[in-house]
Amino acid sequence: MAATHPPHVHALLYEAYLRVSDVVFEGVKAMDVRVRPSHSAVFFHMEHEGIRLGRLAEKAQMTAQAMGELVDDLEEFGYLCRVPDPTDRRARLIVFTEEGDAALRTGYKIIDDVERRMAELLGSDRFAELHRMLTRIIADF
Amino acid sequence: MAATHPPHVHALLYEAYLRVSDVVFEGVKAMDVRVRPSHSAVFFHMEHEGIRLGRLAEKAQMTAQAMGELVDDLEEFGYLCRVPDPTDRRARLIVFTEEGDAALRTGYKIIDDVERRMAELLGSDRFAELHRMLTRIIADF
DNA sequence: GCATTATATTAAGGCTACCTTATTAAGTGG
DNA sequence: CCACTTAATAAGGTAGCCTTAATATAATGC
Image (cartoon, rainbow over all chains, first blue to last red; front, side, top):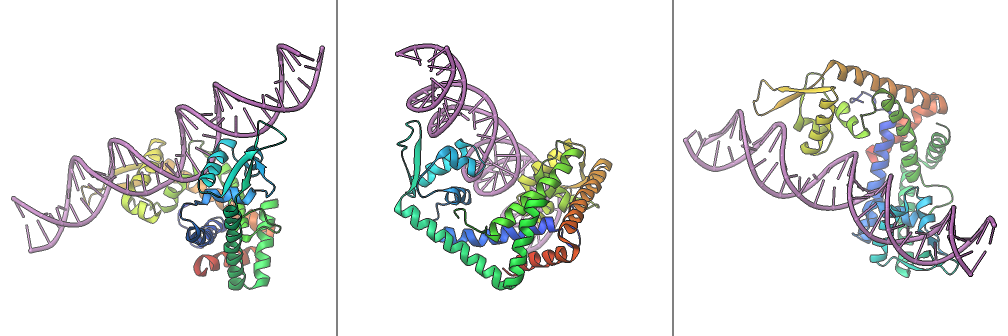
């Protein structure tokens, strides 16, 4: 707290994340202005064979209701559709439309590009080191 | 997007930030359960001589209205108070109470402790390297 | 085969952390 | 002293979640 001389790594992690996210999200907006950052959780945890809402919510660590709204949006945008689950009539499978699949591939390209740019900025050895340190913090801090 | 084999640094930055934030916020809750993460912006940008709401909002990059609510809360909790600004009768200066000052010092301790633990986990050379890389990303990405 | 319990989804409403668009009050320049 | 700006606040809105409850269907035990 209170602006301190050399910024804390805690604060730097946040700012670096924001910076990188902004660039990613600019790319996403260029693809489709309707897609918001929160929708990325859906693409991130989707499965090509189709997935149930509950499982999608669980993977994204949010409630089925919250995930349901995100899926509603993406369905409305034409990226997903819900089909009956043949194995359980209570459930429906969420699957990609062709447009959804194309959007996913575009999303990958945007992120891969950002990762490549970061590796160029830092040098690939240090980028790999950054990857390892962050992984370590997540696992063991 | 879509769970990829070695996670992207973009995602790792976010998760590492969340992990560290959780630890910081646990410490803050132990101090005062009423204080929420959003209040940290106030402590972070306060000035001991007193500061106007508008300037505080500007430093924290949010609207005066949003900052006003955070300051209202902290005033209610007894950490801040608003006194007339002798140089401009439209304005009021936000100043720390003694409790607010003590809370700020406790907050510093919590964060410094977290930073120390991270340095121990990674080793201080690598921790310094992490600091430099994050700073680089923020500045030049 | 039927009641009980569990699971999948959706509906309704709430909360936090912001924002935008007025208002009100008090300064300031010509 | 009058137009204009600035400081703060009020009112109401939005995104991104959450909790609690309702509804439909399934699975299980007797």
